[in-house]
Length: 203
Image (cartoon, rainbow, N blue to C red; front, side, top):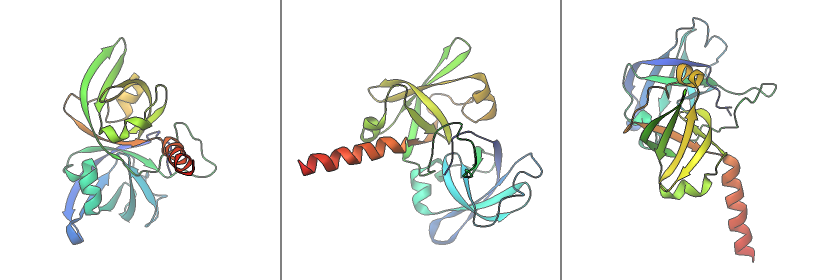
């Protein structure tokens, strides 16, 4: 489980084929000891996707993406040199600075517009219609693993605002119209929707 507060960014330094159509991604960071406390088998969030570390050094990890992950997330087309957001798993005594994320990406969102809003950026995203019911003004959503507030809902998706800090420490600051990102809706919205569905069936 994660909080959506990005700890660092890493560069994909190698992409290799894996078994059954999967891929292996090696990700390296500029902080020499960042991964020193990560053990083989630990979970790490890369661009919003929960991965298991199968190899590691003090400054790199290697993860394996199965075909389903490649189909549903940006890792289906990320290449060597791509930069991804990184967050280690939340500890039970840790701080929840954003909102709780599972790292189970719901799908791909496309940037439809990037609009300057004073000193801030407002990013508009299009997502599949099936997920619109999980959006709420002032609610939360994760984009490439970053916990963000929905500042506007639109007929085809949502908008978020980025402060300068978020633009600097994540890969969202360089997004432009037409780019694709991973998104995960708020898990609480999913549970509420499920409860309402069950209640309507009982009635």
